[in-house]
Image 1 (tube, helix red, strand yellow):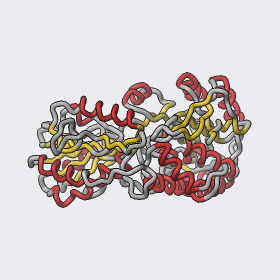
Image 2 (cartoon, helix red, strand yellow; image 1 turned 45 degrees about the horizontal axis):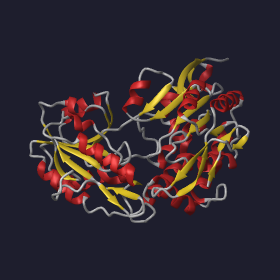
Image 3 (cartoon, one colour; image 1 turned 180 degrees about the vertical axis):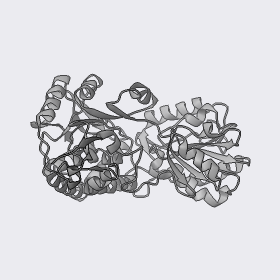
Image 4 (tube, helix red, strand yellow; image 1 turned 180 degrees about the horizontal axis):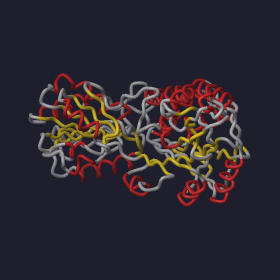
Length: 461
């Protein structure tokens, strides 16, 4: 499997290539890495390119979505892609299928989704009759959009398709862990009608990655807290970092009635997504019974290779899995382990389950905290790892801040008003809804269109 860069001049195979291996270390192919000068020239070509008409873009997106999901792209059939991406990234096969469907829906419905972000007082075109008496027109903030993609889940590539729908030219720097999905998607987009100067794949080293951001009008980057801190004040960059999603169950609700939702929120997507719950807070009761019940349920998840249809947990090379386990046990010091602890008792045994081929499943971990303000509550790891803690009104909103999603199982409307007003709680799900819930047209971390677009006053005769 040779994954070339996809530049303005077509596929480009470089001398510098990154070996690609599956989760067991078995070689799978090579990824071309382009130098900084190539990035500079490619981005210049995107700036020079014209934007295709709206109808042309939308038709090409729809064709590309179907081709990506069900067709043969660059000689690789859809089922072969699913198996390959599972082995390459360690994403369970069932999760890869869900991601493919998310990408297909995004491609076919991208314009409908972005229209949900348009201000109600704005129109899309200066030719709209409303402009005769004066109106706002929704326009792009630039022409070229760059994406530093994540490799934790193939579905991250569903979002940037909205930029193509809005008329941006898009440059994607793929994750070294999982470059196959963007390679297949961009190849499908080109086969469906997008020109080589409309969407490009630019695998790079870290030095050239900075050039990608410099040359773009706007960018979206994925990473840890350091990425959030680095770009927090840059108006040209939209950072996507840890989700730290949470569930709060107040005293007017019985956690036993919602255990299925808690388990699903922790374990769906293999626990790798920013929308997975990493902290569960319980008011007015000892959190130990919930932690025990949650550990019992998560312990039932099977240990299987990623290409197995029944697999639900992420797989990594053994040395990577062991490093994550070591990190977990280091940060979990002082907590009470119910599952995945470092000891040898029923709650111990760690989280690494070797498969015997050089790969290992990362199994769930459940730890109990004494306080919702414990530092561990801010720790997010790429497998089902959850911290269970007590919560009281004295802890207040502070313990619930910095949540991409907060599921609040409560009937306290005053509390819900406060949570809705809290800026750092990005999404509020009221009642028995898993933290991973999402639907077309619903914002993830606000609408991407809010970042890509602006309004401009227009009046014409």
